Image 1: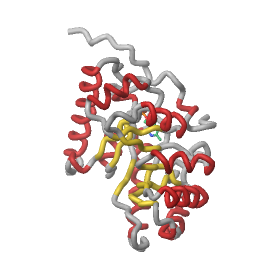
Image 2: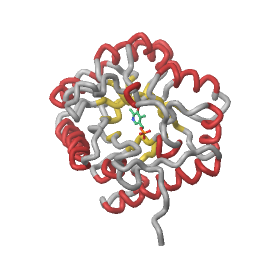
Image 3: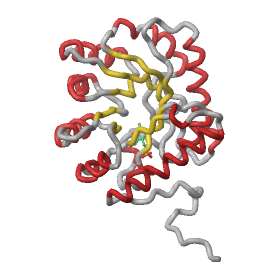
Image 4: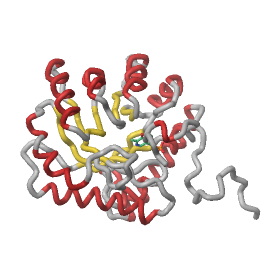
Amino acid sequence: MDEEPTNRPKDEPPGTEFPSAETLEDLVRNIARVRERIAAAALRAGREADDIRLLPVSKTVPEDRLRLAVQAGCHLLGENKVQEAHRKSENLADLDVAWSVIGHLQTNKAKLVAGFASEFQALDSLRVAEALDRRLQAAGRSLDVFVQVNTSAEDSKYGLPPGEVPAFLARLPRYGALKVKGLMTLALFTSDTERVRECFVLLRTIRDRARQDVPDGIGLEELSMGMSGDYEIAIEEGATVVRVGQAIFGRRPTSDSRYWPSTP
Ligand SMILES: *Cc1c(COP(=O)(O)O)cnc(C)c1O
């Protein structure tokens, strides 16, 4: 039998094509496929699939399709840009859905995040920690946070250098409204899977070391790592949260350089 025709570009390995998702059925199917692959990766690693949270990433996806995603069972959605996340949270306020902000935050947007988000995964400065904490205290809220680490040594990525993580964690207990859950990273953008894996191994190693003298009240159970192209590798290396957009919602038309400025 002939091979199935495919639109996949030649330099992409099988499995990295992203089926589009226009209808509820499409979304249900894509989510089920991702969950199957999560379960298979967990099995390979001797882990429980239930210990891995799938965070659907909905940036650029229009609100009508997000309504379908909620119907398909997505009750926490990840967004990179604060304003887009906030707008969607307002327009979908009638639905049972919470918002995770997974992109870089400037202090002048801390008030917005403190008002609507239930999770923030990209904490990498004390100024932002301080601004968020102040706004959260004022609002009588708390926020789950992940500390973002730059494991790829690329200037274009946000996140703390690995060596600064322990000292940073030591200063977080003073921000009582921030509930620190763990660490987050983006791997190197390359088709060289061994170099991708090294980023995930590094995040786990940083976490394991930091655990030895982590201050009271700072949780390091969670490792948020892995996206559509590499979440199975991340699971093999210990991810407890995978942030998956395109494998659920279809290929994004916009370039990723919008989210990771100055990517070469
Ligand atoms: C967009 C994004 C993802 C998901 O990327 P996909 O390729 O759509 O799976 C994960 N993490 C962050 C920080 C993102 O901005």
